[in-house]
Amino acid sequence: MIEAKELTKDFGKFRAVDKVSFKVEPGELFAFLGPNGAGKTTTIKMLSGLLIPTAGEASICSVSVTNNPVEAKKYIGFVPDEPNVYDKLTLREFLDFVADIYQIERQKARQIAKEYLKIFELDDRQDDLMQGYSHGMRQKTNIIAALIHDPQVLFLDEPTVGLDPRSARLIKDILKELAKEGRTVFMSTHILEIAEEMADRVGIIQKGQLKFIGTVEELRQGQGKEGSLEELFLQLTASDADKELISHLRG
Ligand code: ATP
Image (cartoon, rainbow, N blue to C red; front, side, top):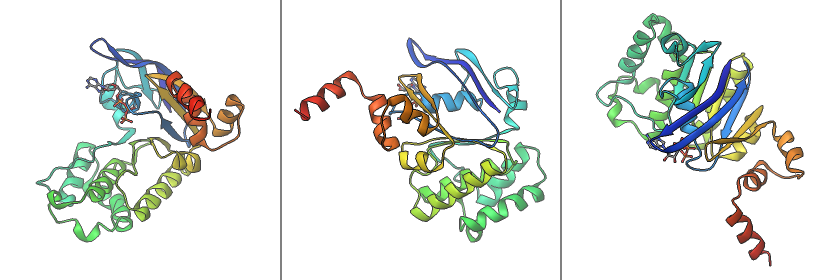
């Protein structure tokens, strides 16, 4: 469903993503983890056709994102880490606009959006200009907009940042449900409890290189250690300087 083959991105002389390869299958909920600046957003943007790779290839539902971006984007929903909206549009106008872009009948799109608007308590704010929306409302708006064309694959870059506990719970439940229905959910997060609770598999990227891909249990076996995903993650991604400091602190 999602395939990255030696996906690489250079910004000038700096290599942000270095020959990353993996597959994520239909019905899978996949969490993409890594320290700040590791290359998560860059990878997600290449997979969803927002950034052209320097080398390698991304494909979605067997369609090459690089060679056939318009076709591939029909299968993709994308929720960015920065929930930007069109300030001068109302939510209703925005969702109609998104439906038009995807060439979906507005009535059909409104029907899909209706339930999400209710769940997210935005149904009575649909005719307000989005310039007055809070961060959380913008985030929810972006999620609804990403689902309006009923995508097979959903990319979310840190979807729960800035959301209140109830909204975060709702989003987690929606994502689990989408995966249960056979869609592929690919999300980045720094909240390792979320990844541990929800993800079928995790991928860990550091300095542009994929360090691990598999289940949390496989990570435990590989690290030869029991413990939470947080402990395993910190151990896997610790630099030599971190290890020295830790051993120094432990005496
Ligand atoms: P975070 O967890 O902090 O959001 P991330 O894993 O999503 O980080 P990316 O945003 O993918 O990291 O960035 C990876 C690296 O690429 C970083 O060193 C970043 O500075 C660099 N980078 C990203 N976009 C650009 C750009 N447009 N121009 C130059 N460098 C960039």
